[in-house]
Amino acid sequence: MATASLASRAPVFATLAKTEPFHSAEEAWMWTMAALVARRDGARVVAGLGRKARPCEPDDVVRCLDRLYRQRRVQLAHARVLRLWGERQQAPDPRYPIERGDWTLWKEALDRLEWPLRVKGIVA
Image (cartoon, rainbow, N blue to C red; front, side, top):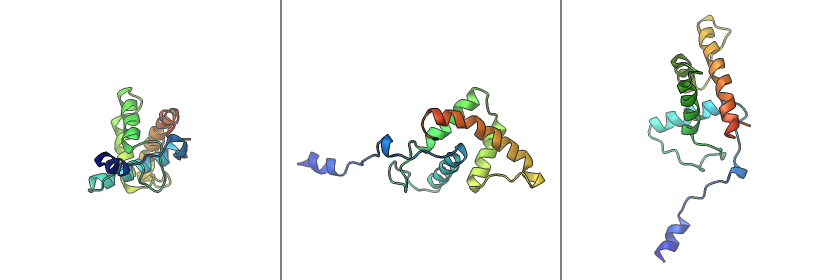
């Protein structure tokens, strides 16, 4: 009987058929940064308990970025801009001269991140 009560408390994970992929790499990145900021602030991020079931964990998106960095497709400056603006939950605005350089790095990084996320099924 002890195993029956444990089985009823086991988490039920969404199957990949029920998950909703992101529309773009930018949307996936913003979601990832929101989850990482929440985790840093003490929240416990648990799979399958969000408003929408996603086909990945935040760390999966970070691993894709890390792989691009190791392949020298993105530089540390790209990662810095993604982190900075991702924590703000907004993209840099190219209309402001002070943000134009960050916007260029932002677009380059997300353009290069798009394909690996599509291959993994994270982005539709």
